[in-house]
Length: 77
Image 1 (cartoon, helix red, strand yellow):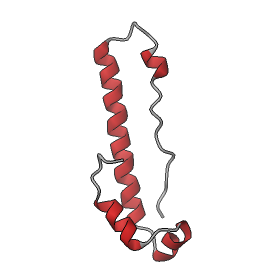
Image 2: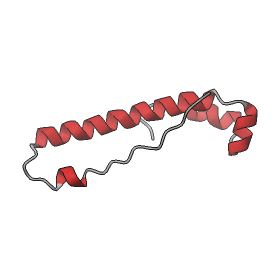
Image 3: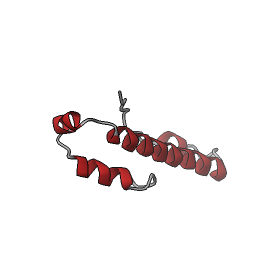
């Protein structure tokens, strides 16, 4: 059965508040968050495709909606 996770929150306030963090390190952390969110979107869309019609009805979605969502690129949130 598919497992859903909480969406990632991109709160870098603690990181950006520190002036001692090198710009390259800050960029690397932001890139890591972007990659993690892309991975999460991809996994969520795959899990959505595996739901039965009954499960989709329970959450108020149609098969056509889930197919359209699954076709979206992983980089689209």
